[in-house]
Length: 401
Ligand code: PMP
Image (cartoon, rainbow, N blue to C red; front, top):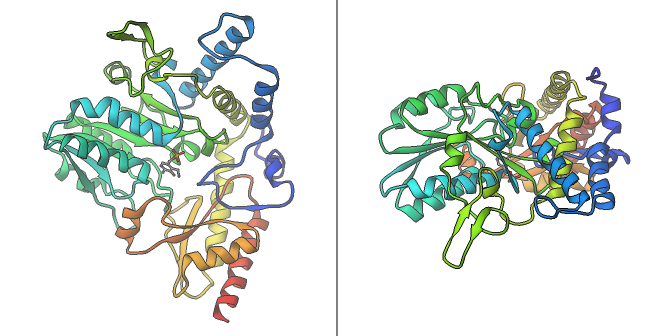
């Protein structure tokens, strides 16, 4: 690992070579050259598929593919690579648990506790399965900062609580609930916990064993990897007792016209030809990340968000929804609609996002219709902050007429 040097880090991102002001990393991270090269190399040199063909290239690629599973396991300290299931992303991971694990167990009247801070990816799959089984989604409220209020959890847990769904880090406020406490409370009640790690895995990779997490879901594309690849971590006994969600090739050991025998975990959850390029790219992202001083990079990123918040605070009517030390800065400006402001920022080539950020219930809890969101990564610099601030000032002048 080398010392974190912001300039060297930034240079590894070709998408920034024209000086783009990219402040939308909470939506998706840009890709470093190492990931681009690994993907290019796969398509140009490694023509094969995995776990099927016997020829040499296919065997080599299968080994590469399985080594990537090991790298992911190490990243979150999963006990074994078999605890890692490849999915399309966080969304698919959550749906897989909702349909494969929860649905066969969910009885009419049962309860699923979901915090009001959740991204729709960690809400809609639970609403769907609740409807399918005449069960109910119970709201874990948020505190005044928009963070899931774990002190309210004990009162919600009862003998009908089957699962708790909680985000490790909000994509709006950057707030991090005390997941260790939530997990302990849920487990004391016999309730299984799914943690949405889509944002958390980037800024604060968990030790899933130490935290005793049951299911952990995340996406490759926020972690500098390709889109369309993600991960579901599950404890061994949970995955062993989870039904395959999709059927198809290579998820079984034998098939007849009347039935089939599922493969061992995790392959029974990976029906069909997988996203091999995605796995190769994600593996390259994780290898590359081991060369980065992540602690220093995170500190640097938080300082950029601090600076942006301090500067924007000078603007009349500015209100921040940022939780302390987050690299995500969601804000609004009194009297200005976020969609007007984001359009004017886009005209000035500032890449930020506006709206509800797929977290409509959180917007309701905060009593707002949406926010602007600038999200920072270690490839940003002070110049990006200053460009954002002056673009906001310019847009406000225009809107004031
Ligand atoms: N949860 C959170 C907190 C997120 O930020 C996102 C992505 N915006 C998701 C879930 C869904 O991730 P994906 O779209 O990659 O499945």
